[in-house]
Length: 255
Image 1 (cartoon, rainbow, N blue to C red):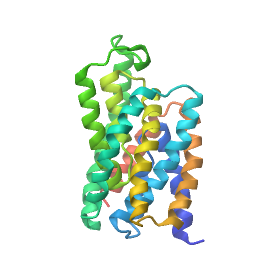
Image 2 (cartoon, helix red, strand yellow):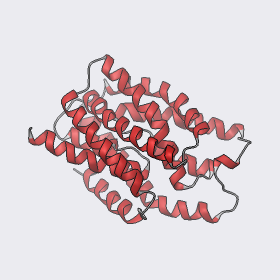
Image 3 (cartoon, rainbow, N blue to C red):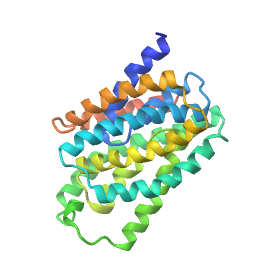
Image 4 (cartoon, helix red, strand yellow):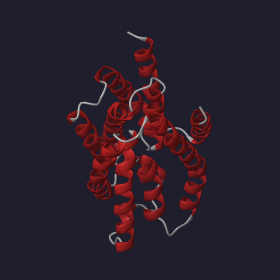
């Protein structure tokens, strides 16, 4: 087993743990890792989506057992993010590796800022009695639906073009628009990512882009990490881990 494959396995476990706990998918860790080995952008995105799919699948099963998923919203997100994945696959074919790294640096910085602010957002939402779980709401305004559809479509584009999953958009969207608690938002995001990542991955497979030897290793590691992260998210305060991870993302984005 090459150093590249072995290193990828351990990275994917870490990505699975973090992606599952935060609800943003492990691709935010996997894609930068693959870019350092000079994979072509479509190969980076497709191989990374194998990891994202594995993480979301494992996490969703555990979140399902804990009854944390809001299926109605998750299905809406999935339906409207899938068309975006088609555009994302097309876009990835026109991005050079240098441009991929450049644009991805901004995504990493944006993700780190979101993760730092995430804890404050969680506290503000929990203190506001106007917010409650989506399960307790029977009326969903048209404005919220329009915003959800629009951002879901954009998340689909982001997911397949960079192989990161759409959780970076899904989670804050669910918290801000619907007042979901953090664990419900992460669970629902992971549920939606099952379908979104699979759609993008299937299209990439059709065109023959994934590196299967690396992808399978990443998928296995992500399965392990996703299971660990889903369980840890119910037992520990992840704020310290999130801040450390945010700092790492900023460092990686500068490389």
